[in-house]
Image (cartoon, rainbow over all chains, first blue to last red; front, side):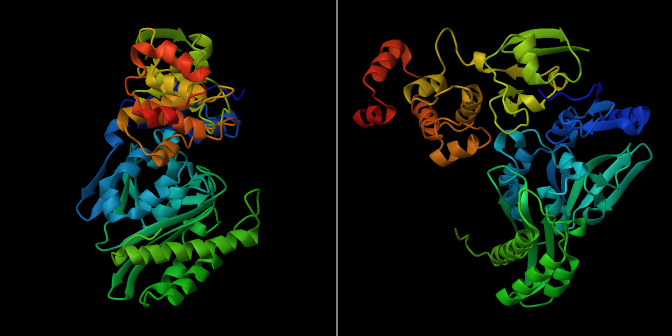
Length: 293
Length: 180
């Protein structure tokens, strides 16, 4: 039987309440949202928080709405809600592509976008989506709010810039009219973490790529992104040759580790191939072309 | 700590350790052993129960997190001595062999049919993609859920004799549907 080490349980009734509890209990307190990453780590004793602050009652942090030229997503929004959201489907198909392959439908009923980012798993799918889209994280403490670019949020495996008494309350994604986006993942079996995955968005001005974002996960890409690959493609025609050049640059930005999911060469191959597929689908979607198989 | 929650329509209160998992709470503290405890890693799905109307893997939910919420376990599928159509479907279509995955499968299936009364086979497979069955190869599980979709009222009054006759004649849902 897997049992977490003993801890004290607190339930927050509001964001202010959660922040007060974090302040009172100090750095050994952890927030728990869906719990589907934290609780397994606690069962394996890889995590041993002294206090768990349950924020599942903060339903006011569960929303997906258009806020001016931005899509605002509350930190407690669950994977199932992201997958079902017509707003995300309209603006960023990458979210639906990714959510379809995150865990399974029952787990998606619990896991949250805020928890996914804050857990900072080096194989997190949404981390690649956030980096590809250059999302921003709004975090709050008793001292006020600050906004952190997704590409500066993670500092390493299971580490982020979040302070112990801060809570991620909102993820903001800029709306880019006409953008096409996509997510491509290879996993060992349904619902598993990726062996490798890549996401992208593309905006076109005629046939020219006016802007592009590329995100990669499980591949050791710093901050889950590949800025050199984006620079190589921005301003170029959206030809398959140019997409392939960018995909090659994305693979070069990766530093995958060999593990039970595969050797380094295989993962680097996947980085290139999956980036290329994500770019191709993004371009096709930006052009409004019908989806192929 | 003391927790109070509603389980299968009944309010229950117990003293527990904060680290107690919901699956052990319903099995060991409430004696509801229909919910099975499997992989302990939120992969296999045999521990699925409903929390506030949604299927969750109870090995990855603390009982403390379920306090104040409404839990439904597999014991609550049967109503007034009559099995839920999903349970009847598993009987009709041999949707189980060893039976270990069955409670989780049925809880997820019931939720699916409540929200989509006529799912395609692909949608059924997607819905149960977070549940492992090591006996059936899933084919009979999918047929069982399809049977329940096609029989929203179950077998009705003829339940017992029909089930016995079907079983004895090795009849299955497919032939029954063709003749109907």
